[in-house]
Length: 174
Ligand code: GNR
Ligand code: NI
Image (cartoon, rainbow, N blue to C red; front, side, top):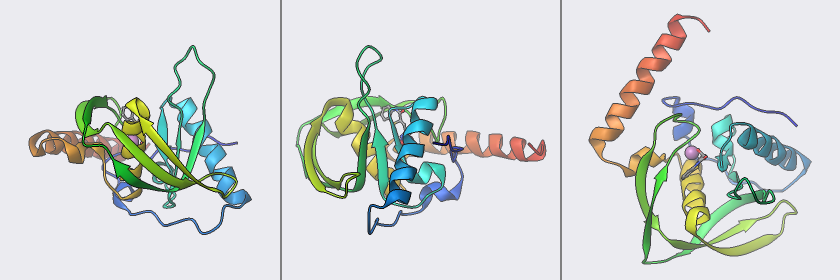
């Protein structure tokens, strides 16, 4: 297993729309394992393939608490097939936008249809932090970031700050 480098804002790769996965083969399962290792190392509670530069529709999640057993989840070609009218607000962060957090409102409960790592179609109703996280990750598969759900002023401030930081990194030839 391999920890892969994370793609950071404002890298345009994060705006790519990812491609559906035709068959769940060993290569796809290896990518899932690498993504889980990368997510646990970060540490984070979710990761979309595009965050490690792979434009394929797969995400991994683990929202278990530190005092609970690990619960790694792999969703391939996930689709939201139902959303509650009830909303919930969470303070979100993103491994591709390090150290920036903001409140985002999303449906509190969703039903997600996906293919699992054995290639079997599944459907799951999720709520709480897991529902927020699945929606955050599916956004990534569509080139959408959580800062797209906050005010334009805040979003432009964040993008400006990360663009400046990327320029500095470049000039130091790291
Ligand atoms: O680690 C993460 N934490 C988080 C917290 C609240 C809402 C969403 C997330 S996802 C994030 C990891 C990440 O960037 N996934 O794309
Ligand atoms: Ni993210």
